[in-house]
Image 1: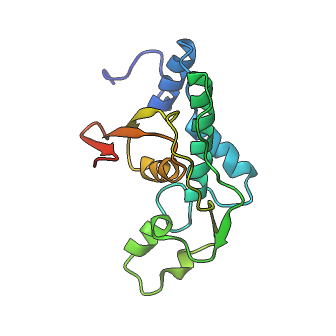
Image 2 (image 1 turned 45 degrees about the horizontal axis):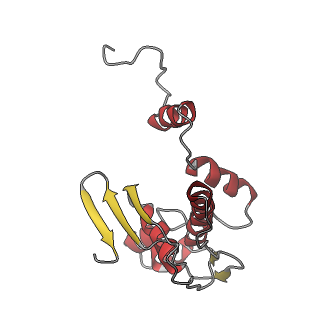
Length: 172
């Protein structure tokens, strides 16, 4: 028990510590967990696909819309936003939304399929107002990037993937 931090119980998560510090320091941020949990309680659609490991592409688009709104406020100017609605509901999920089902090694994976919403195909205008961004994160960012890029919200981005690899867009 000598590694237990004093003042913290065993149920305290790093997430809780980070949110507390960001609020204490008045750092602007979007609490993605709170946003998605609220969405899960209010949306008529699944937030996480039944046969997938990440949030749905529609959920990702809604998160990006929130991020673009926050970026506009922080930059003091309007930047392109994400168009997420009205979604197209598909009976068979796209590959990213069924990645676990496809890995399940069973004959018929359709038991893991539920109708899912998909954002409309939208290509935002190419403007000089688009910012350059850096992200630090993991696999949940791939659908985030898809929504950012489909809506043409950033000019360039770099991702530090699990603090180990760097991915840059658009050059690779």
